[in-house]
Length: 120
Image 1 (tube, rainbow, N blue to C red):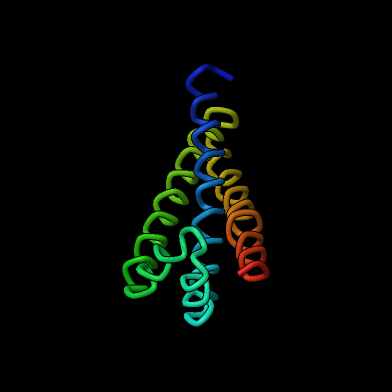
Image 2 (image 1 turned 90 degrees about the vertical axis):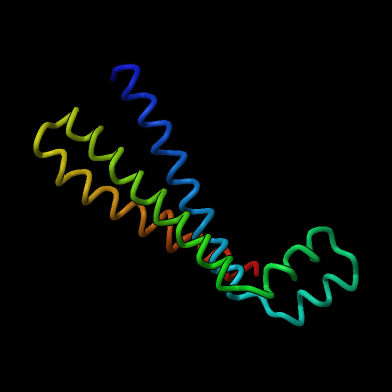
């Protein structure tokens, strides 16, 4: 693997981690109950006031989360395709498509959402 391919791989992994973060954040935010946030604010939990402000305009927060998630998912797919084509030629397109789809669904969408829903 060349130097640039190593850089692409590192960026790909960062994109996957960000995707998992955005997916978990989306679920945690939508599962969070307003009364619980008010309780956290009244007990002066650090960051609770910021969460309460974000909940006043949920469409803005969800829009930002979904935009970020789409950007990193697209970047991950592009990087995986570039890497796969450099390794396997034309067949790399199919390999990257299948591989990224499975990775994104299992590790970057489903698992973070389950964890976030359980801990929200």
